[in-house]
Length: 145
Length: 427
Image 1 (tube, rainbow over the protein chains, first blue to last red):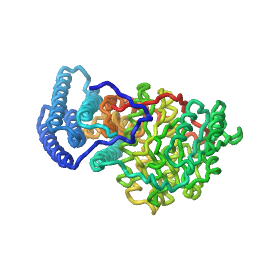
Image 2 (cartoon, one colour):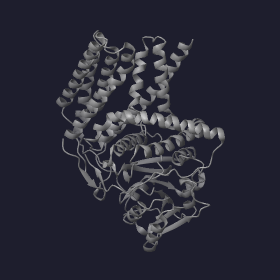
Image 3 (cartoon, chains in turn yellow, brown):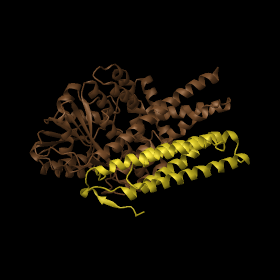
Image 4 (tube, rainbow over the protein chains, first blue to last red):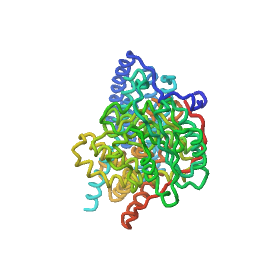
């Protein structure tokens, strides 16, 4: 990542836009469609699996849905997006097992686990989604003017 | 029985939260899709410049920033003979009035109105109405003293009046002093979500874009028709938005009409500003919700969006309320289904912050602006939300107290400006 750059307001252009061309529209649809299939398959695996904490399973499904619907249509290669989705799910799987281990060792009271897990889940979901978006912006988009 | 009532309440609140989340998800997708379709900037009707414009600047103790704005207005590209400037010095105790007078000596278009002790201190709406009495233009353009517009902002704003149904045109607000500290950076994120995605999508979807009280142009004839700004309203901008719609006109948002603002620089200033916004917005919700639902000039989608927009500042309180109910239900023995609903509450903790844009809306806004680094701070929006819960709760309590004791007199709720910031972050 490059360091933070600033621009004097006197040189400012208007609301920055992405430069686009028509061919990209088709890529977006293909990427989105591919992503939705991936997300559906992953969600099915999560739902079928008995190893998942209920809250983490829900967090992962929401993560997949938001990630695919908003990241996959952006500029950038399908490989990068698929890799980011895969990494996100791997983090989710590890997080789940960490939680299950903590649960079996009774490190945290059950009530506290139930109450805090959605918050903790969203912390990593939002953080990872933000970093992925930042990565996509850096690699795919540029300002006009 | 208590458990049953709590369960019903919890389901209802979760459903409301879910509706708002879906609303913002639709906004995000709309802004994203719309950006793909656009290949160039909107054409500007720069040749015709048909309107005589009155720029109105209400100011009270703004000596650090007023000169910068007046200088900038002198640099605007709109034909100078078609612009008048009306600056209201609303009883300032600093050098604001002197600075205005000094500029007036070199610019004959500038008219300075000094409000005396009796007239001044009644708030921004009162100062705007004072300016309105001196306005000769067909279009009134408002700027707060800390703003810094782009040179051809008038051409861009006025382009929105090509539709006769449009009564108000709102431009985009971008934070000027973003690099200053973490508060200005988070406010900048909120602004990106609120304008680049939220306002823009509402324009595309033909819903209700909001007049923000500044960087906005209003037809003079419409202001006369609706009786100017409501001086009893704390959020005179939101109030004007809905009075415009109820009168059968529309607000148009133009993303390319960009203006820079000085964001609040401390949590204390953030609290004061947002508490005023929250209380004013809630007050407007009480005032206009029923009228919006009954009004026959509004379409169904405008009514739905209007009600959701009017009540958005109640959401942090409802989220807190649903968290307390959910927590109570766990102690009373949670039913199995509750975990699914429980999940929406923390999800909403990354929503309804500041200008009430969820994390994915803010994120896509940064993407559309080409800001690769700005989204790194998005996890911190959780803390901004928690702060807003306290702000909105306090604002609601204050509003209830003012209703109970009949307090109506409004004054200025000043945000202190420093005149900092001459550049903006581009990545």
